[in-house]
Image (cartoon, rainbow, N blue to C red; front, side, top):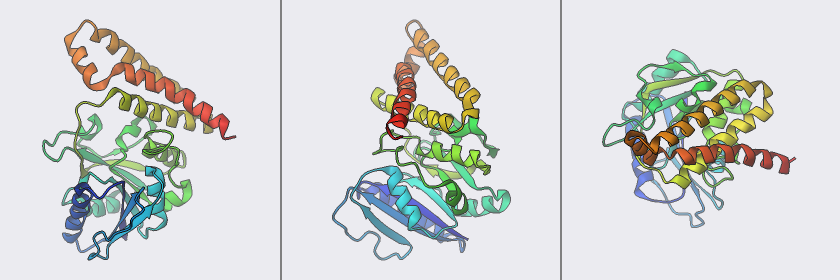
Length: 293
């Protein structure tokens, strides 16, 4: 078995070196499986050596931006049976490769989502990362399958196809490229598990800018709309998810006017931005879909 780590990056900042170093260290603690690391640099025309003394690290360069495009390029140039997708400013725990090897033997699933923790505080990146038990994921738990902490088998990718390049940073829709892959995996009958022992480290930001919340919410909403248009049977899930999401944020927004606790939560979660982005994403994807027919 061979594991490929695919890292998309737009710079040579120290973050990617720490990311690669963490993978090399974890790999050095295991005699197997064999690992390779593919770094795909976007928007960098000047090619220069990167980890030139390590044959397991390969650098590729794309003139265009786009996270999904970079990941697809990495897949096309990979040789692994399983591919780990990680951000350039994230890292893996020293036990990661040993845990992944044991996880694949135990569950024999087609894809896995890992746990993301802050490298300094140990705080969970999202509430999903607080779960301490392995979970077989259904559509309702797509948020357990996160962008900087997921693994997909080559066999599954060959069946469902590559990342949709309309999603992800540098694309039409700001994020949700991994969620789109998740829905396509589930729709195709593949098994996906959340495994808390697969630990990734990524800085946790406690306050996002409202415009970022709008764009990410729009991307998630657009992704769900895409899957609904292609699979109408998802309509009950689509209505339920969006109704709950919108109703919850509308109520919280109202409470934030009168109650300090919700006012403080609004500073972090930006309830209006979630509402705005969710509605924006639905109509943006419908418009996009009609323009590409």
